[in-house]
Image 1: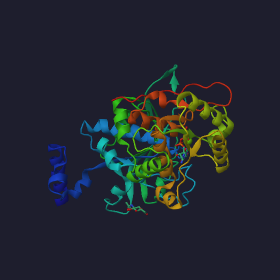
Image 2 (image 1 turned 180 degrees about the vertical axis):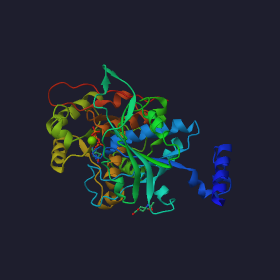
Image 3 (image 1 turned 60 degrees about the vertical axis):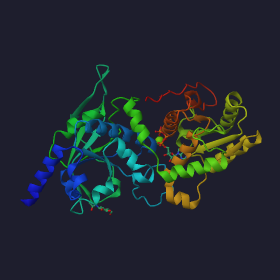
Length: 398
Ligand SMILES: Nc1nc2c(ncn2[C@@H]2O[C@H](COP(=O)(O)OP(=O)(O)OP(=O)(O)O)[C@@H](O)[C@H]2O)c(=O)[nH]1
Ligand SMILES: *[C@@H]1O[C@H](CO)[C@@H](O)[C@H](O)[C@H]1NC(C)=O
Ligand SMILES: [Mg+2]
């Protein structure tokens, strides 16, 4: 009874003041947790880190917009777990967002919390999700030739994730939902069970941005600042090896040379080693003839990287790679090393990317935010032969 009265009081006091009266003034309100509500999401297991960053933005924008209408739901940041490309992680423990991002900066844009923050607040040893909505595509997205926003409950589905390896996350009810269109329509699903406290969406990659490339999109993107240690390490590398202490460097060009699955499966989009050398040389001669330093970010194998390096060196360039020490790798993880590569690429005088790689897209956005001229950013490696479409330009909006 006393507890109920307390809850009532808390509910009234929040209504009276949406700044969180209780939390700020009395500090006795750790019990705030009783009235908070949380939405978790997960992404199709095989998706990579950089698409997941875009999925985050869709959810973060959905929550930031809703917060303006005093929405009480918080977004739980899904830990990074068993990512396909992160091969050096032997133990597949979940990695929290603070390892890669500045979570305070994320919070300045949207009401987000790390999963461990809600773990420490539950009273039992179980985190129970009231409804887990498993999103699925419609078999035919075009009805009468038209793509329309819609959703429909029903059909068969399974949750194909693993709750980030936590066996103490449980679910009361799984709901299968065919869904297409804008992410803000997920609020209709949320509204079906207003007394839920924890809900979750699986296949969070299915809903789309309400407005891709809008000012809000870029505000969100700007809030995705990296973890400070990653920035520091990248800047130290740029200062030590690439002779630059500015934000916009003139002393090197950068290349994102995506290999692995791209080199195997996308021969029409990515060049051979020789083709890469020829294009980098041609690009520098045309745009920046005095540049000697070439920074290469790549997921390529050592043998390919050595070939690329020796061929570029033989025609007079100095090639740089960020090669982590074992302790840096252990500390930053594969994901952190990839971010360091991205930061170093972002500050270069010119950037040449890989066609349709989300890793490249994230670098291009970073450069837009830094204020580089778009012509220095939206350049791509072409296949050795055949057509080579120009990359799309997504310009920053302020
Ligand atoms: N360190 C480093 N890792 C890279 C590099 N390029 C790719 N990777 C790794 O491979 C992953 C790339 O996968 P995604 O994030 O899916 O990006 P993508 O595969 O280029 O793009 P899509 O699959 O088309 O979405 C990264 O998260 C890295 O782990 C690179 O230049 N440096
Ligand atoms: C679930 O397990 C993890 C690790 O085993 C633990 O850190 C976390 O606090 C647990 N969650 C809850 C709600 O007790
Ligand atoms: Mg990928």
